[in-house]
Image 1 (cartoon, rainbow, N blue to C red):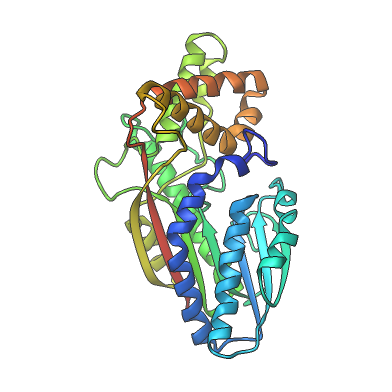
Image 2: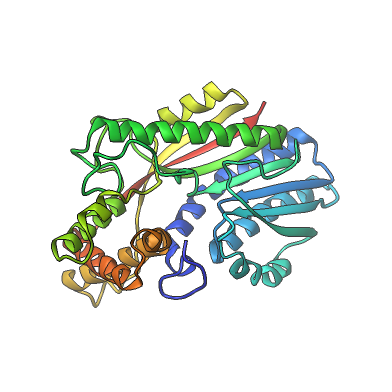
Length: 352
Protein backbone atom coordinates (compact mmCIF):
# COMPACT_ATOMS: atom_id res chain seq x y z
CA UNK A 1 0.00 0.00 0.00
CA UNK A 2 1.21 3.52 -0.73
CA UNK A 3 1.94 5.46 2.44
CA UNK A 4 1.52 9.14 3.23
CA UNK A 5 -1.50 11.22 2.31
CA UNK A 6 -0.72 12.24 -1.28
CA UNK A 7 -2.80 11.81 -4.43
CA UNK A 8 -1.83 8.16 -4.89
CA UNK A 9 -1.70 7.18 -1.21
CA UNK A 10 -3.85 4.48 0.33
CA UNK A 11 -5.09 6.99 2.88
CA UNK A 12 -6.47 9.23 0.11
CA UNK A 13 -7.98 6.39 -1.93
CA UNK A 14 -9.60 4.10 0.63
CA UNK A 15 -13.09 5.58 0.81
CA UNK A 16 -14.52 2.33 -0.52
CA UNK A 17 -12.87 0.42 2.33
CA UNK A 18 -14.28 3.02 4.72
CA UNK A 19 -17.79 2.26 3.49
CA UNK A 20 -17.19 -1.45 4.07
CA UNK A 21 -16.02 -0.72 7.63
CA UNK A 22 -19.24 1.21 8.25
CA UNK A 23 -21.29 -1.68 6.87
CA UNK A 24 -19.64 -4.21 9.19
CA UNK A 25 -19.73 -2.02 12.28
CA UNK A 26 -22.88 -3.63 13.80
CA UNK A 27 -21.26 -7.07 13.51
CA UNK A 28 -18.12 -5.88 15.27
CA UNK A 29 -20.11 -4.27 18.08
CA UNK A 30 -22.32 -7.33 18.52
CA UNK A 31 -19.36 -9.69 18.80
CA UNK A 32 -17.51 -7.49 21.27
CA UNK A 33 -20.54 -7.26 23.57
CA UNK A 34 -21.19 -11.00 23.44
CA UNK A 35 -17.52 -11.76 24.09
CA UNK A 36 -17.30 -9.45 27.11
CA UNK A 37 -20.34 -11.09 28.69
CA UNK A 38 -18.86 -14.53 28.11
CA UNK A 39 -15.48 -13.49 29.55
CA UNK A 40 -17.08 -11.70 32.52
CA UNK A 41 -15.61 -8.28 31.72
CA UNK A 42 -11.86 -8.73 32.32
CA UNK A 43 -9.78 -5.89 33.79
CA UNK A 44 -7.54 -5.72 30.73
CA UNK A 45 -8.57 -6.28 27.10
CA UNK A 46 -6.08 -6.99 24.34
CA UNK A 47 -7.24 -6.19 20.81
CA UNK A 48 -5.52 -6.40 17.45
CA UNK A 49 -6.34 -5.05 13.99
CA UNK A 50 -4.53 -7.23 11.45
CA UNK A 51 -3.67 -5.63 8.12
CA UNK A 52 -4.51 -2.24 9.62
CA UNK A 53 -2.84 -0.24 6.81
CA UNK A 54 -2.67 3.49 7.60
CA UNK A 55 -4.62 6.70 7.85
CA UNK A 56 -8.17 7.60 8.76
CA UNK A 57 -9.68 4.13 8.29
CA UNK A 58 -7.38 2.68 10.92
CA UNK A 59 -8.38 5.47 13.28
CA UNK A 60 -12.10 4.86 12.68
CA UNK A 61 -11.80 1.14 13.43
CA UNK A 62 -9.87 1.88 16.63
CA UNK A 63 -12.50 4.37 17.74
CA UNK A 64 -15.34 1.96 16.99
CA UNK A 65 -13.80 -0.95 18.88
CA UNK A 66 -12.60 1.00 21.91
CA UNK A 67 -15.88 2.90 22.31
CA UNK A 68 -17.84 -0.36 22.09
CA UNK A 69 -15.68 -1.91 24.81
CA UNK A 70 -15.89 1.06 27.18
CA UNK A 71 -19.59 1.53 26.47
CA UNK A 72 -20.29 -2.10 27.36
CA UNK A 73 -18.51 -1.70 30.69
CA UNK A 74 -20.38 1.51 31.48
CA UNK A 75 -23.75 -0.04 30.66
CA UNK A 76 -23.13 -2.80 33.21
CA UNK A 77 -21.62 -0.45 35.83
CA UNK A 78 -18.18 -2.02 35.52
CA UNK A 79 -14.90 -0.19 36.06
CA UNK A 80 -13.38 0.69 32.69
CA UNK A 81 -10.67 -1.76 31.59
CA UNK A 82 -7.20 -1.01 30.35
CA UNK A 83 -7.11 -1.66 26.61
CA UNK A 84 -3.99 -2.91 24.85
CA UNK A 85 -4.59 -2.07 21.19
CA UNK A 86 -2.13 -3.58 18.71
CA UNK A 87 -1.95 -2.42 15.10
CA UNK A 88 -0.46 -4.98 12.74
CA UNK A 89 0.69 -4.79 9.15
CA UNK A 90 3.78 -5.61 7.12
CA UNK A 91 7.01 -3.85 8.16
CA UNK A 92 6.88 -1.51 5.15
CA UNK A 93 3.45 -0.20 6.21
CA UNK A 94 3.25 3.53 6.94
CA UNK A 95 2.53 3.25 10.66
CA UNK A 96 3.62 6.86 11.22
CA UNK A 97 0.61 8.28 9.36
CA UNK A 98 -1.64 6.44 11.80
CA UNK A 99 0.39 7.27 14.89
CA UNK A 100 0.04 10.97 14.07
CA UNK A 101 -3.69 10.53 14.70
CA UNK A 102 -3.21 9.03 18.18
CA UNK A 103 -3.45 12.39 20.05
CA UNK A 104 -6.83 13.03 18.39
CA UNK A 105 -7.89 9.47 19.19
CA UNK A 106 -7.03 9.86 22.88
CA UNK A 107 -9.29 12.90 23.10
CA UNK A 108 -12.23 10.89 21.74
CA UNK A 109 -12.11 7.86 24.05
CA UNK A 110 -12.58 7.22 27.75
CA UNK A 111 -10.33 5.12 29.92
CA UNK A 112 -6.79 3.96 29.28
CA UNK A 113 -5.86 2.70 25.83
CA UNK A 114 -2.27 1.75 25.00
CA UNK A 115 -1.56 1.71 21.26
CA UNK A 116 1.35 -0.11 19.66
CA UNK A 117 2.49 -1.22 16.22
CA UNK A 118 3.27 -4.88 15.52
CA UNK A 119 5.09 -5.18 12.18
CA UNK A 120 5.00 -8.61 10.57
CA UNK A 121 3.02 -10.98 8.39
CA UNK A 122 -0.23 -12.28 9.85
CA UNK A 123 0.75 -15.62 8.34
CA UNK A 124 3.21 -15.91 11.24
CA UNK A 125 2.99 -15.71 15.04
CA UNK A 126 2.59 -12.13 16.25
CA UNK A 127 1.52 -12.37 19.91
CA UNK A 128 2.19 -14.50 23.02
CA UNK A 129 0.09 -17.59 23.72
CA UNK A 130 -3.52 -16.96 24.73
CA UNK A 131 -3.03 -13.20 25.04
CA UNK A 132 -5.64 -11.82 22.63
CA UNK A 133 -9.31 -11.24 23.42
CA UNK A 134 -10.57 -9.72 20.18
CA UNK A 135 -9.16 -9.59 16.67
CA UNK A 136 -10.40 -7.53 13.73
CA UNK A 137 -9.33 -7.62 10.10
CA UNK A 138 -10.94 -5.82 7.19
CA UNK A 139 -9.99 -6.24 3.52
CA UNK A 140 -6.74 -8.04 4.28
CA UNK A 141 -7.24 -11.82 4.30
CA UNK A 142 -7.74 -11.92 0.52
CA UNK A 143 -4.04 -10.99 0.18
CA UNK A 144 -1.97 -14.16 -0.07
CA UNK A 145 1.42 -14.77 1.52
CA UNK A 146 2.96 -15.11 -1.95
CA UNK A 147 2.13 -15.49 -5.62
CA UNK A 148 1.03 -19.11 -6.17
CA UNK A 149 3.21 -21.51 -8.08
CA UNK A 150 2.00 -23.02 -11.34
CA UNK A 151 0.96 -19.81 -13.12
CA UNK A 152 3.24 -20.21 -16.14
CA UNK A 153 0.21 -20.57 -18.43
CA UNK A 154 -1.45 -17.39 -17.18
CA UNK A 155 -0.59 -15.27 -20.22
CA UNK A 156 -1.81 -11.67 -20.51
CA UNK A 157 -3.50 -11.83 -17.11
CA UNK A 158 -2.40 -10.70 -13.67
CA UNK A 159 -4.98 -12.88 -11.94
CA UNK A 160 -7.80 -15.35 -12.61
CA UNK A 161 -9.82 -14.38 -15.65
CA UNK A 162 -12.40 -16.02 -17.88
CA UNK A 163 -10.63 -18.33 -20.30
CA UNK A 164 -7.56 -18.98 -18.17
CA UNK A 165 -6.59 -22.58 -17.50
CA UNK A 166 -8.09 -24.63 -14.70
CA UNK A 167 -4.58 -25.09 -13.30
CA UNK A 168 -4.30 -21.34 -12.71
CA UNK A 169 -7.58 -21.29 -10.80
CA UNK A 170 -6.57 -24.29 -8.72
CA UNK A 171 -3.17 -22.78 -7.94
CA UNK A 172 -4.80 -19.68 -6.51
CA UNK A 173 -7.39 -21.66 -4.56
CA UNK A 174 -4.77 -24.02 -3.12
CA UNK A 175 -2.58 -21.12 -2.03
CA UNK A 176 -5.53 -19.50 -0.27
CA UNK A 177 -6.39 -22.74 1.52
CA UNK A 178 -2.80 -23.15 2.69
CA UNK A 179 -2.52 -19.53 3.81
CA UNK A 180 -5.88 -19.29 5.55
CA UNK A 181 -5.28 -22.56 7.38
CA UNK A 182 -1.95 -21.16 8.58
CA UNK A 183 -3.62 -17.88 9.58
CA UNK A 184 -6.16 -19.76 11.71
CA UNK A 185 -3.50 -21.95 13.29
CA UNK A 186 -1.40 -18.93 14.28
CA UNK A 187 -4.40 -17.13 15.73
CA UNK A 188 -5.55 -20.25 17.59
CA UNK A 189 -2.34 -20.08 19.61
CA UNK A 190 -2.72 -16.36 20.34
CA UNK A 191 -6.44 -16.00 21.12
CA UNK A 192 -7.71 -17.21 24.48
CA UNK A 193 -10.77 -19.50 24.72
CA UNK A 194 -14.03 -17.67 23.89
CA UNK A 195 -12.05 -14.85 22.29
CA UNK A 196 -13.37 -13.69 18.93
CA UNK A 197 -12.37 -12.66 15.44
CA UNK A 198 -14.38 -10.62 12.95
CA UNK A 199 -12.96 -10.90 9.44
CA UNK A 200 -14.16 -9.06 6.34
CA UNK A 201 -12.75 -9.77 2.91
CA UNK A 202 -13.57 -9.76 -0.76
CA UNK A 203 -15.08 -13.02 -1.97
CA UNK A 204 -17.00 -14.46 -4.88
CA UNK A 205 -20.34 -16.15 -5.29
CA UNK A 206 -20.60 -19.95 -5.24
CA UNK A 207 -21.32 -20.10 -8.95
CA UNK A 208 -19.88 -21.71 -12.04
CA UNK A 209 -17.67 -21.42 -13.98
CA UNK A 210 -14.79 -21.89 -11.58
CA UNK A 211 -12.55 -19.57 -13.63
CA UNK A 212 -14.18 -16.19 -14.16
CA UNK A 213 -13.56 -12.44 -14.20
CA UNK A 214 -14.02 -12.18 -10.46
CA UNK A 215 -12.47 -8.83 -9.56
CA UNK A 216 -12.77 -5.84 -11.86
CA UNK A 217 -9.50 -4.14 -10.84
CA UNK A 218 -7.37 -7.05 -12.03
CA UNK A 219 -9.12 -7.25 -15.40
CA UNK A 220 -8.51 -3.53 -15.96
CA UNK A 221 -4.87 -3.84 -14.89
CA UNK A 222 -4.38 -6.76 -17.30
CA UNK A 223 -5.85 -4.73 -20.16
CA UNK A 224 -3.58 -1.77 -19.34
CA UNK A 225 -0.47 -3.97 -19.39
CA UNK A 226 -1.48 -5.58 -22.68
CA UNK A 227 -1.69 -2.08 -24.19
CA UNK A 228 1.85 -1.30 -23.07
CA UNK A 229 3.11 -4.52 -24.65
CA UNK A 230 1.51 -3.59 -27.97
CA UNK A 231 3.16 -0.16 -27.75
CA UNK A 232 6.57 -1.64 -26.95
CA UNK A 233 6.76 -0.01 -23.51
CA UNK A 234 7.11 -3.31 -21.64
CA UNK A 235 8.00 -6.82 -22.76
CA UNK A 236 5.45 -9.60 -23.13
CA UNK A 237 7.57 -11.80 -20.87
CA UNK A 238 7.45 -9.15 -18.13
CA UNK A 239 3.67 -9.06 -18.23
CA UNK A 240 3.33 -12.84 -18.36
CA UNK A 241 5.52 -13.21 -15.26
CA UNK A 242 3.56 -10.69 -13.18
CA UNK A 243 0.70 -12.08 -11.08
CA UNK A 244 -1.11 -10.59 -8.11
CA UNK A 245 -1.00 -12.46 -4.75
CA UNK A 246 -4.73 -12.14 -4.19
CA UNK A 247 -7.62 -14.58 -3.93
CA UNK A 248 -11.26 -13.83 -3.21
CA UNK A 249 -12.77 -17.11 -1.99
CA UNK A 250 -16.35 -18.24 -1.84
CA UNK A 251 -18.11 -18.56 1.51
CA UNK A 252 -18.07 -22.32 1.04
CA UNK A 253 -14.30 -22.37 0.56
CA UNK A 254 -13.83 -20.28 3.69
CA UNK A 255 -16.07 -22.45 5.86
CA UNK A 256 -14.33 -25.61 4.66
CA UNK A 257 -10.92 -24.31 5.78
CA UNK A 258 -12.28 -23.20 9.17
CA UNK A 259 -13.89 -26.58 9.82
CA UNK A 260 -10.85 -28.54 8.69
CA UNK A 261 -8.48 -26.49 10.86
CA UNK A 262 -10.79 -27.05 13.81
CA UNK A 263 -9.76 -24.40 16.36
CA UNK A 264 -12.64 -22.00 15.81
CA UNK A 265 -16.41 -22.17 15.84
CA UNK A 266 -18.16 -20.26 13.06
CA UNK A 267 -20.45 -17.88 14.90
CA UNK A 268 -21.90 -16.19 11.82
CA UNK A 269 -20.98 -15.82 8.17
CA UNK A 270 -22.76 -13.37 5.89
CA UNK A 271 -22.27 -12.19 2.34
CA UNK A 272 -23.40 -9.09 0.52
CA UNK A 273 -22.73 -7.19 -2.67
CA UNK A 274 -21.18 -3.79 -2.13
CA UNK A 275 -21.48 -0.95 -4.61
CA UNK A 276 -18.06 0.56 -5.28
CA UNK A 277 -18.88 4.24 -4.91
CA UNK A 278 -16.97 7.32 -6.03
CA UNK A 279 -17.54 11.00 -5.47
CA UNK A 280 -18.87 13.17 -8.29
CA UNK A 281 -21.15 16.14 -8.82
CA UNK A 282 -24.13 14.39 -10.38
CA UNK A 283 -26.06 17.56 -11.10
CA UNK A 284 -23.33 19.18 -13.19
CA UNK A 285 -21.62 16.20 -14.81
CA UNK A 286 -22.81 14.53 -17.99
CA UNK A 287 -22.25 10.82 -18.65
CA UNK A 288 -18.90 11.43 -20.34
CA UNK A 289 -17.60 13.50 -17.42
CA UNK A 290 -18.86 10.86 -15.00
CA UNK A 291 -16.96 8.21 -16.92
CA UNK A 292 -13.69 10.16 -16.98
CA UNK A 293 -13.88 10.90 -13.24
CA UNK A 294 -14.74 7.27 -12.58
CA UNK A 295 -11.72 6.11 -14.59
CA UNK A 296 -9.33 8.39 -12.74
CA UNK A 297 -10.77 7.38 -9.37
CA UNK A 298 -10.47 3.68 -10.12
CA UNK A 299 -6.90 4.15 -11.38
CA UNK A 300 -5.90 5.98 -8.20
CA UNK A 301 -7.47 3.28 -6.04
CA UNK A 302 -5.66 0.54 -7.92
CA UNK A 303 -2.39 2.46 -7.83
CA UNK A 304 -2.64 2.94 -4.06
CA UNK A 305 -2.66 -0.83 -3.48
CA UNK A 306 -0.47 -2.11 -6.34
CA UNK A 307 2.17 0.52 -7.12
CA UNK A 308 4.85 -0.97 -4.87
CA UNK A 309 4.36 -4.42 -6.45
CA UNK A 310 4.49 -3.00 -9.97
CA UNK A 311 7.63 -0.95 -9.31
CA UNK A 312 9.32 -4.01 -7.79
CA UNK A 313 8.54 -5.98 -10.95
CA UNK A 314 8.83 -3.41 -13.76
CA UNK A 315 11.26 -1.11 -11.97
CA UNK A 316 10.36 2.24 -13.53
CA UNK A 317 8.10 4.96 -12.16
CA UNK A 318 7.57 6.31 -15.69
CA UNK A 319 6.16 2.94 -16.74
CA UNK A 320 3.87 3.02 -13.71
CA UNK A 321 2.43 6.34 -14.88
CA UNK A 322 1.78 4.78 -18.30
CA UNK A 323 0.09 1.77 -16.72
CA UNK A 324 -2.40 3.82 -14.75
CA UNK A 325 -3.14 6.21 -17.60
CA UNK A 326 -4.14 3.12 -19.58
CA UNK A 327 -6.00 1.76 -16.57
CA UNK A 328 -8.03 4.98 -16.30
CA UNK A 329 -8.82 4.77 -20.03
CA UNK A 330 -10.13 1.21 -19.77
CA UNK A 331 -12.09 2.01 -16.62
CA UNK A 332 -13.72 4.93 -18.44
CA UNK A 333 -14.54 2.70 -21.42
CA UNK A 334 -16.17 0.16 -19.09
CA UNK A 335 -17.98 2.80 -17.06
CA UNK A 336 -21.62 2.33 -16.13
CA UNK A 337 -23.57 4.84 -14.07
CA UNK A 338 -24.44 2.23 -11.43
CA UNK A 339 -20.76 1.44 -10.84
CA UNK A 340 -19.09 -1.94 -10.19
CA UNK A 341 -19.77 -4.11 -7.16
CA UNK A 342 -17.68 -6.34 -4.95
CA UNK A 343 -18.91 -9.46 -3.20
CA UNK A 344 -17.95 -9.30 0.47
CA UNK A 345 -17.78 -11.95 3.18
CA UNK A 346 -18.17 -11.07 6.87
CA UNK A 347 -17.32 -13.86 9.28
CA UNK A 348 -17.20 -14.00 13.08
CA UNK A 349 -15.30 -16.82 14.76
CA UNK A 350 -15.10 -17.96 18.39
CA UNK A 351 -11.99 -19.66 19.76
CA UNK A 352 -13.01 -23.06 21.08
